[in-house]
Structure formats: C-alpha cells, structure tokens
Length: 212
Image (cartoon, rainbow, N blue to C red; front, side, top):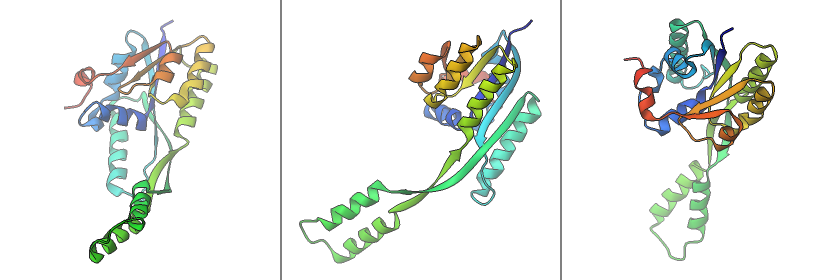
C-alpha cells in the first residue's frame, strides 16, 4: 500500500508567510506542483485549501481575484479543493489616534489653531477603524485533519501553516500513528516542536512551482 499524503493549507497564514520572504505573484502558485514537490515519494491524495470567503458586498476586486484563484487551482487538478470559512468586519480602536488625542490635550505650549484643529479632526476620524477577520477557518481545518485521520483517509499529513493554534490537532493526529509534516515560509516554533519535521520554505524553493 502506498503512503497516502494529504495537504492541509491555512490559506491566509500561507499567503502572509510567502509575502514575508518577498515572494512575488503569490497568486500564481501552482498547488499541484507544490503538493507533488512536498509529498514525494508519497502518494498525493488531496490538497485542501482553507480560507475565509471574501464577501461580494465588500472589495469586489478582491472577491473576483479569490474566485479566479480557486477556479484556476481546481482546473489544474481535481485533487485540489477549497473549504471556506467566513470573513466578518470588526471595529477596532486605533492606538495611534488615542495617543494623538492625549498628546494634543496635554500640550505644554500653544500651537497654530488651524494645525491643532486639523490634528484633532484626524484623531477623531481615525479613532475607530474596521478590519476584516477570518472566522471558523482554523477550526474547520483542525477538525478535518482529526476526522480524516480517524476515518483512515491518509497516512501522512502536510500542514502548510505556522499557526500555533493548530498544535492540538497535530498532536492528536500523531497520537493516532500518523505522521505530520509542517511546511511554511514563516517560523512556527510551537508547531515545529509538535510535528515530525518542520520544512522551512525559502524563496528559492518556489522557483519551479509558480506559473509563468
């Protein structure tokens, strides 16, 4: 029986890790090539990509790009599948804006009234911002790793992430007698300590897994 390998990709973590090492055209990555390169000589069974679905009510260009990327990967090889979580908006307070307001309130000297008014306006406008937050992505990935291991659907898991929150899932899968390799362009000390081996992906590693 061949050693069956499944890749679990934490899409957002993967993207930011690749960006941190200066990889360009990240959307041109070919996950069929990436998968085959990582798992060789094991039998590549599937690559499961987890990411928050960009809402159509927000950044339409980003939503279009995400759909195009997923469709392209699925067209290359049917073993690639995408599993969506949610993306929700969350209000956050700007620490910089709060510091600016405190600074202006405690100025020991008088400054130009127009400048003071403009700085106060900026602080008020930027006091609260809206950010996009992924929901249910890590949980879905972790559950699938565990459930698929319990169902004996793979022998070896490759986790493409450096997120330490996934450590309990890695530990459980290994306790079931399966091997887990973590591959990432980012460092992940917690996952590295929990898996069978951590594969650091440097910039040169990507030279033959990108579309032209």
